[in-house]
Amino acid sequence: MLSVSEARERILQGISPLPAEVVALTDACGRVSAAPLAARLSNPPADVSAMDGYAVRAADLSTGGATLECVAEAPAGHPVATTIGQGQCARIFTGSVMPAGTDAVLIQENAQVDGRAVTTGHVIAPGTFVRCRGQDFAQGQVVIPAGRRLSARDIGLAAAANHPWVEVTRRPRVAIAATGDELLLPGSTLAAGQIANSSTPMLAALLRQAGAEPVMLPVLRDNMSDLATLERMVDGVDMLITTGGASVGSHDLVRRGLEQVGLKTDFWKIAMRPGRPLMSGHLGRLPFIGLPGNPVAAFVCTVVFVLPALRRMAGLDNAVEPPQRAVLGVDLPENDWRMDFLRSSLTHDGQGQQIATPFPVQDSAMLHILADSQALVLRAPHAPPARAGDMCEIIRIDQGL
Image (cartoon, rainbow, N blue to C red; front, side, top):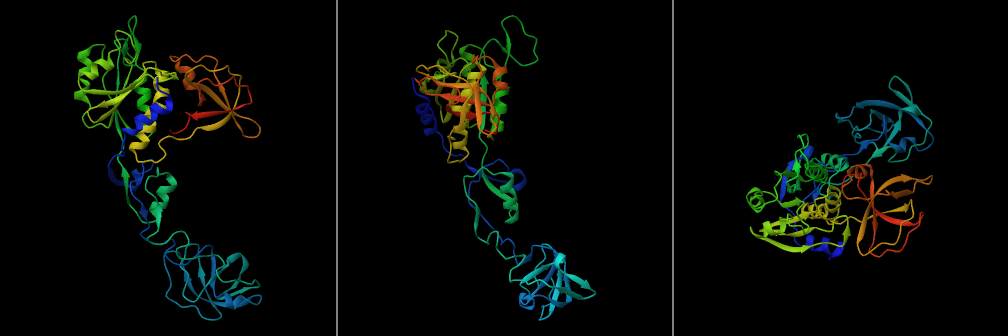
């Protein structure tokens, strides 16, 4: 069986970034920039005031204050053409363009005003409360590099750089097909031996959270003819994932069924728990990952293998995000030959340190434990016994993945 790291690397070797598209800035949050974004103007585009007050010549207030004549008013958005001379000032507001001849701002709290006379006892240095042209960024400067997942902060930056549109990598479209005679849609009347299909809606939500567009296919029954129809249902998608049918039972037909319509299997079975029966390959040009049927195992394998592939498709350099560190909350026994991904609660101690506590039951069909978990504790193959208080590695599953 392959190790987790080797299996993930082999999956990623067959994945390439998707083409770019141009979207409105308002639709770009969460997308990945496909090209560097250069500022179309400087910010601020001129020297502006950082406070409400009076634009002054610092030289007039260099000896301990003076009385100046206010000869103009410059509201934000309405620059004045007046050049301010010796002994003069202009009323100014936050964001107002500094009038010609001025180089500092006397804030209104430090001024006494009588008609047009403005008096202060303060010494003002050049540049006081002035935001200089290009202080934030200069015209032509790259403000957002290629390969960044755009946050709300990046959207604000792109808007300030005067971009109404941005070039981003197209969202991956991922087809999801659950397999199994026992599966029915949630809300159906279930007969003996039947269960609600939880994997497809759960994985679709996880993929959507990760920035992909899930395409939910009908449940495929345990027969070769149903599996053969997959080839005709995946036009226009970028990846195919199935759940179930990947084990060794006589009704686990996914591998054999898809190989009849062109699946080239790269590997099958991974030394991990949960999730050992996982397949990877290509159906024609299409990357394929066959997930286990147990819903918890399907979720864990999606986090470990599918999401890094989606990051690679999106153009992100860090396809595999490094695990976080936490304090182990309970003792754990020596591990066997498989890598464990233990569903765990996550709390914090008085110093703010994360404490990860694996649940005592880790059955791969128990979804309520998964729903109550905030992290997966990673246990390497043959790891020695661990004690509460030891450091451990975790993958957060309660945040955007």
